[in-house]
Length: 329
Image (cartoon, rainbow, N blue to C red):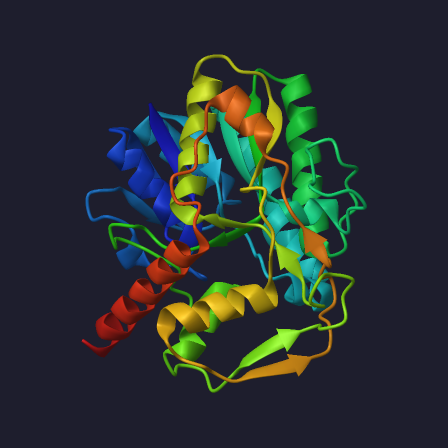
């Protein structure tokens, strides 16, 4: 089976590329390198520079490489940015996905795994959040992903086409073998930012919101290690390959950590007591989102192997040190 990975030079996408290679599958990468890095793609993996919404290019890749499945990671992902640039997010996420889905259908690609998000739930009233929780995104980012889920649902009803949408919670950590990690310099992921601050790459860490209705006043999130997330995609592809029906799954551990708890773990692991500055809340942030993720375990047999916050932070620290050495070379 040949798999096209859009956004395969980015953080999560590059982990998926390695996971596919580790399982002996053929993989092709399409990435416009707006946030990804060509060096993150293994040299023996065919790479195409371009947009996932370029139907001519996508159809050519499908024809030349015998693509049977698509894993779609390419997207804009920063919630506050989506609030100030909603049209940019609908273009990059929803419009691009629509073009990619159409190209897949027209090219005969019948299996599609979509990188969705827990942001589709907005501010859920019941925790943990199940896949049946009503969708009520609080940001254009969440809405752009929800709209793509709707397009996938309707396309599957109309064509010989099946999909799995994986709703990510907060992705963190790096490849345990040191092959790839979160490499965007100005990334907004909490653990990435905290690790950069501990290593002196940032002067301080901004804490957005200390007055939420949570145990310590800061936001609570479910952190999932990135290699575990890639493994969930492998399971989803296998499921579709066996004829599985179109569906959605939460991808999280079911354990919530507050921002302040994460910061404390980073300080403990790094041994650095860095400065934290309290800031006003950010637009679009939900107070707490924790996954109910028993369905993917039961139906796909997914078993996390890296469910340990300290280990996740250790991986992020190692990768950040690797990046510093790489950039200095």
